[in-house]
Image (cartoon, rainbow, N blue to C red; front, side, top):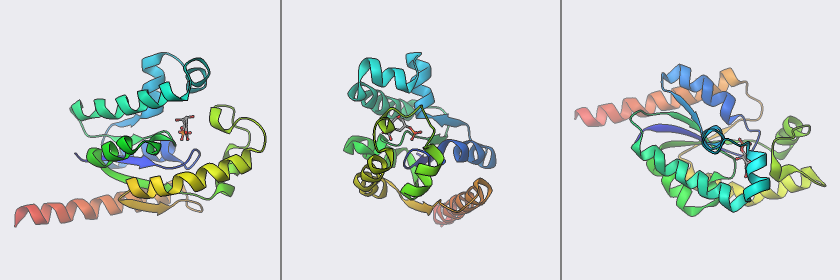
Amino acid sequence: MSNLILIGFMGCGKSTLGIRLSYRLRKPFLDTDKQIENEQKMSISELFEKQGEMYFRDLETNCLKDLFDAKEEYVISTGGGIVLREENRRLLKELGTVVYLKVTPQTVYERLKNDKTRPLLKGENPFEKMNRMMEQRNRFYEDAAQIIVEADDKSIEELTDEISNIIGKKEEKQNEAASH
Ligand code: S3P
């Protein structure tokens, strides 16, 4: 399948960039977190509080599985923890081209230091927590991704250009190969 899927840590810009890319590539946009919130009629914070993280992770897996029945190809932004399950990493790869937006803990900290919507960053020492989580998750992002984009010092415009160019070239190659 040829969805375009953005993965990466909280605050790396998946949703904002996903919306821009969906305009650029003329594909509808889907955000797995928003999809889950709409289906469950609850915010992610409430879901974590009332049902726990495992329940949320099951919903993430179901959301990916449902995408195999979709009639259209999407630009998809995902929750930062979607790569934690081996099954999800496999599903992501099967669903299309996976792009990892790689950022440093400093970037994430600056962007999210006043954020109240991420249950996993609540509590003492959010920077340390973030650092540790990013260290643990990096190999999962790298394992799931076909394309890794350094996203720290680039504007949304620059990232949109960079990723749509990569996708354009990839599609050209595929079309060439198919015509031979
Ligand atoms: C999570 C990231 C969040 C959301 C949930 C868990 C994570 O999404 O899915 O709070 O485990 O990293 P964003 O990456 O869009 O913030």
